[in-house]
Image: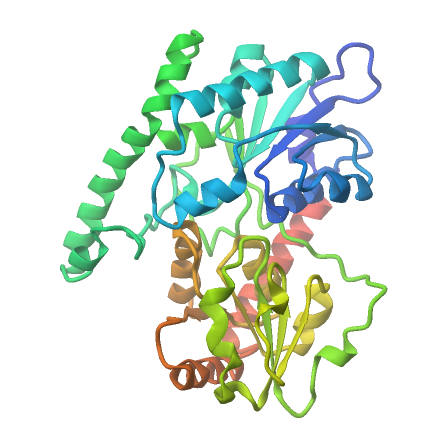
Length: 404
C-alpha cells in the first residue's frame, strides 16, 4: 500500500474493527465511482471501504464487490443540466441542508474512521459536524492552487465581450469575476455552516477541499503552486483494466483511420451528429457510452460499453467531451484527444490539452467536411513527440505511486 494513502486512511480502527472504515461519497457519475474504486483497490488489504450508491448505480456497484449503503445525493443529471449554463442556483440552502443532514445520519450510523468524497460538496460540513476526518479527491483545475488560472468558459454570458479584449486584461477580469462568483456561490454554504455552528470558510473552493486533499492530476498537465502540507498531488486516477471477455477485433479496420468516440455517462449525442456525414465514410467510427446507438451510418459501429484500454492502441484518435478519465486513458496510449466540451469543467480540461499540443477542441457548428479535415490531421499525430512525452510522464507517475 502506498505510504501516502496509509498516512491518509490508516488512522487506527475504532469500535473493535480489524481495519479502519472509510465511507465513500462519490458524485453520481460512473467516472467518479471508478476513480474512487481505483484508490480503494490500492488500500483494500488494510482498509475497509463502503460506497454510497444511488438507485441508478446500486446494481452496478454491487457487481464490483464493494459493500454499499443507499445515498440520495443531489441528482447528478440536474447538476449537469445547470452546469451546461454555468448556473449554480441548484445549490440552495434547502438542498445543501438536506444532503448535509443525510450525510450526518449515515456517518453516525456507520461510524467510519474517515470519509472520502469525490465532488461531494457538503461532506466537509458533515464530517466536521461528526468529528470525522474528511479526505477529498479534487481535479487540478478546481484547486485553489492551480497555477495557470481557469479561463472564462465559452458558455459564460460575458465570453463574447471578454474574448475581444487583450489577453492580460481578459485574464485579470476573468480572475476578478471568478472571485465574485465563488463568494456568491458559497453564500448558501455559509448559512448552513452558521446554522449548525461550523467553522467559517472563505470560498466555494474551500468546500471542495478536505482535511486532506488529493489532487488526481498530472503536475505538468495541471500545475499547482504553494501547496500547503494538507494538499498532495496524487497523480492521475483513471480506469486501466486491460482484461476483457469480449473481442474488439471487429471494431477496427486496418485499411482505415479508426476513431474512438466516447460519450461517457454525461454525453450529449447532438454535438456529434456530424460524424454521420459522408466526410467520414473513409474512417471507422467506434461509438461508446450513453446514447451510443443514436448515430447511424455505414461507417459507424456502436456498443454501450467497450474496454477502451483494449481499443485505444488500435485507434488513431479519441473524440469525447473532455472528461478527465477519457483524456488520461487516451494520453496513456499516445492517442490525441479531440473534444466538444459539454460544460465548463471539460473546457478547463481541454484548455490544458490544447496548450500542450495534445489535442484540440472541435466546433460542432462547423461544416462536417471542415471538422473531418481537422480530425484526420490529428489522427496523423498519434504517438508524436508531445504525446510520447506525456505518455511517459503518466506511466512514470503511475509507477512511482504504486512503488509507494
